[in-house]
Length: 333
Image 1 (spheres, rainbow, N blue to C red):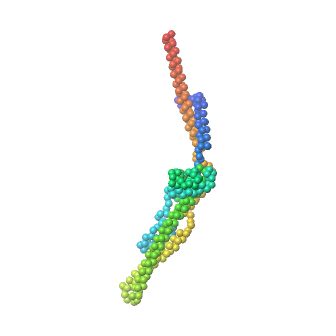
Image 2 (image 1 turned 120 degrees about the vertical axis):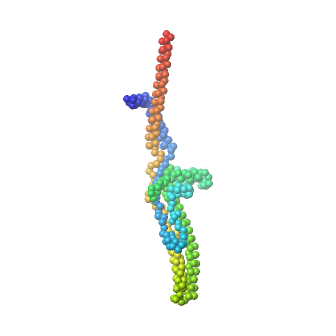
Image 3 (image 1 turned 120 degrees about the horizontal axis):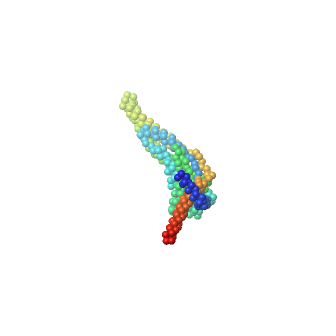
């Protein structure tokens, strides 16, 4: 019965204050819709799935395996070829590269750098050393989102225009490829320089050992009956053979490194190409409007109940005052 009474009381209040209960959510929702349509900038999100190409290379493996057997430690670039994509994609280095790339937008026109678009600076005057450039970097980083799903990286970018969002994703993938190629090129050059240096050193060592073996044989032409001389010759032959093997391996790896140096391969595999989003990702106007209408309706109901409470309070007070006047009149009459 109490629950039924409460429900009837609320229903009665709604009927009595129907204008308040309906006007507040309707007017509030209408204002919100106008604000969302004309004053809030829509954001469009474009997505791509990328996968790192295999970082393993046979360029160094043979060299490392053979040379290590002879006590020679060669630098390996494989350990440092692993990339942390979230940190790399959302780095200031990549952001600066993106800001220098040109894009075509409806609002700003064709072939405008992203920096010019963000700073609204189309005069060509450099702003790379002022605060607006730093703000533009932070804005680029905030536009990018990266989620890891196993070995797959889900890359998404939100922008004010759908084509711009798609183009920025493509530019990020391109800049990632350039960054990796630049890094790998630097590592290959270091490996090549090291191999050349070792080749020169091993060649000189091999020349000395061969000369030493030659001199030994010239001095000792008859060693058949001397076990000690045979052992010495075998030792010299073994040193020449080992050094020759190292020199041959270094020459082979130098040729492989040269091939790697001129090889042009994609280091990032794009599983899903970014597409132009058909609908804005935010704000969700329908959901926002519905939620706002519900909240405003609840608020209007509270307002109606408060108004009804004070009205009843005033009626009770007026009745008490009227009863008091009536009692006083009866007393003095």
